[in-house]
Image (tube, rainbow, N blue to C red):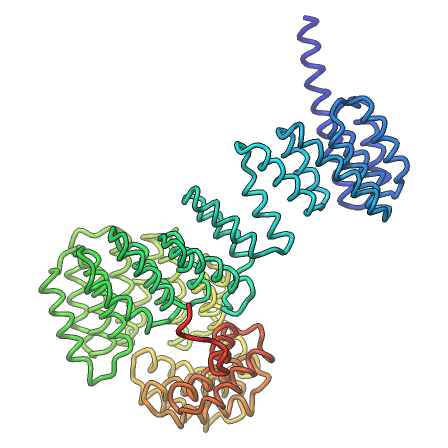
Length: 596
């Protein structure tokens, strides 16, 4: 019974100390040091031999600038403890707080000297120095311990400290040593590298990592260095250079194309279609895997179809038919069949043929998610045909069929967009408000953009006259009826000149002019936005698109450079900032495209 009583008392005592410590920590966080002092004094008296209690109490005295009291407390504790090294560090830190740096250095050196006879204490000493932000001394301690005992390994701690110290090159070098010893460490190292590497190739961290890796690659070729270079170039969104590295790895190992496949998907997501096309060609030509060839050919024809003009449609149609001859029209080519149906409906204006194909496809043994994809496309085609109510039924079914999937959120957005096309703006806005916090960032952004369009242009115009005209033009754009959409935008701009919706209409129309090859008219629209709505939310869009136009279509790099420069200095929060900066530097001649 007595033993049980002692156990229970011990448990309650431990819980009480834990609660007191938590309360004292809260007081410390709030800057109420006198309140924290009383609690830590109580905890220290209960167990004076526990270094944690001592250091907590010392820290309060230091916060209260009672350095002499702190020093006396450390001296008393040191006398009662056989291990002096941690107390030496604390005395040094106490001296540092008083501006007595030379005295502090003496204490730190004395603590580090302990490692000479007791290398096993390296971590305790170095870590305490690290906690006190004495990085140079902590590095010295770790390095000394490793030199004295080759079984000790503190390379990870050193790599982190080199980074905190600002010695970035040494940090990279040390981490790469760790990867060389254990390739599994690469993911962890890349997470650390991402703190120093940006999307800017001219950033100091990017240049140093590239330098360290290239030196190693030249001295001793190893796929691990290619992998790290590929990762670096992906961070910079330079997918062609990343592809060079992945190609070198594949030629050396010839195992699989998983990394190349992931790279092409990333390039497509980042809209670098030129790099994606080059990578896909390589996958088609070099891979021995039927699955890889199928994936690459499917992606290539999808990209080609998306960018095609009407005179290319027939050739693309034949390409699809050839692929079906090779791979069949069973469940295995589900995604290819969806892409084909979309091409038929939205490009070839063969909506009925696309619908028939999808109805047949839906009868095959599909998963509920694949069936949802079929319904989504069927609904999209119904919107194309302006059969809005039938489309809304399909979209609603998807939300019931896969309620916790992103497809459900996508269908909800399309319900809102369909209501918008119908002119039911209040209901559309209600749906969109829910989607602003959607899991998918893309859906959330689309919802935000459309809700802003509705909200901004229905405050003064409660009859929605201009907004209805704008939605009608957008519907024609969705239906790929570009000429009709351009005409409707022109009419809107005449009928509602000076209306707040004017800049959006100019921007949408400019996109269509570009697709139609009417570059001068697109240029004029962008310039009108810059001249008349320079402070508006679409100003950066206009500057960026006009810059691209001058760079890629109108052969005027000087004007392109001026526009990109405007984004850099006047629109630093723009989503186009990174690409504008990259293009600006290239136009200025900063980047050597032949170099890694």
